[in-house]
Length: 420
Image 1 (spheres, rainbow, N blue to C red):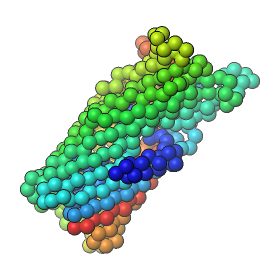
Image 2 (tube, rainbow, N blue to C red; image 1 turned 45 degrees about the vertical axis):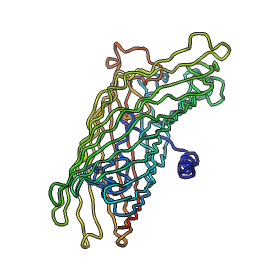
Image 3 (cartoon, helix red, strand yellow; image 1 turned 180 degrees about the horizontal axis):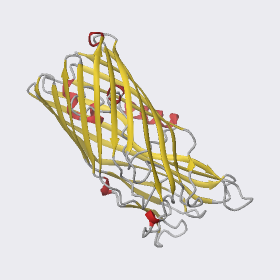
C-alpha cells in the first residue's frame, strides 16, 4: 500500500503537474476517455475504478477484478490581465501542458461488497505570463500560479439486490500552491510562495439504480474539503522574507444526478452537477514575521465571492461493429462561477460560462480488455471593465480590467481490464 501511494506522487513530481484552468477549482474536462467522449457523463452508469471520481456506487458493477489507467493531458492558453500589470491591457499565457492521469482498481470481495482504490488530480488552476516591466530599463516580469489537488481515494460499494448499488469513497487530498511574480533578474519580487497541505476529513458518496433493463440512474454527493497549505517562508507583496506562511483552500460541496438509456446500438447519457462554489468567499494569506513570530501576522486577502453553478453533460453513443467499436459525441456546459468584481487571470474568464464539445471512440480488444480515446475543445471569453470592479475590496491577487479568454484542448486515452 505504501509503494502504491508513493508511485503517483512521484509521477506528479516528474511530470511537473501544472494548470487546470477551472471554473472555480473544479475542472469539467477530466476523466476518462470513455466518458469524455460523451461529454463526461458517467454518474448513472460508470462501472470501473474511475467510479471513485464520478460515483463510487459504480464499483458495484465490477465482476471479480477491474483495473483502469487513464492519461488525460489538457493543453492550451488562457488570457487575462494580471493584477499589477497595466490595467486594461490583456495578455496570453505561455502554452502549457497539464498531464492529468487516473490509476485505480476494484476487487469484488463477495456477492454484495466491492472494494476499490484510485489516485487522480481532481481540480486546480494556474498559468504563466511573461510581460514587460512598466518601469523603463528594468527587467521583465514572469508571473506564475500553479495550484493542484491530488486525491487518494479508497472506497467501497454495496449491492442491495441486482438493481441497487450504494457507494462511499474516503478522500485524502494533497494540495500544492506555487505562486511566483518576480522580475527575471530577481531584483523585484512581489510573490515567491510555495505551500503544501493535506485534507483527511472528507468523502464522496453515491447511489446507482437500474429500474428496468437499459435504464441506469445515479446520484452522487461530494462533501466539502477544507485544506490548509503552509510553508516555512515566503515573499508576499514585497521582497521581504516572511516566516511561516499559511493559505486555506476549500473544495466546495457538489451534488450530481445522471442517467443513461440504451436502446439497440444507441445510448443517451446526461449528467447534471451543482457546485456550491459560494462556500468560497475569500482566502487569507497569513505570514508570520520571521524574526518575531509573536507579532501580529501580515495578511493579504484574496477576495472571491464565487457563485454556485451548474455543469450539464449530454452525450450520445453509437455501437458499431456489433458493439466492438463505440462512437461517441458530447457537450459540456459549465456555468459562471467567478465574479467580474474579482477576476482571476489564472482561471476561467470571470462572469463567463465555458462550452466544451467532445468526441471519442472505443475498441473492445477482447472480452477483458478495452481501450478508448477522446478529444475535447473548451472555450470561454468575457470582458471586465472598470465599472465591473466598482465597489470591490482591495484584492492584490485579483486580475485587473481587460479581456479574458480561454482556448483549451484535451486529449484522452484509457485502458481498462475486467475479469469476471
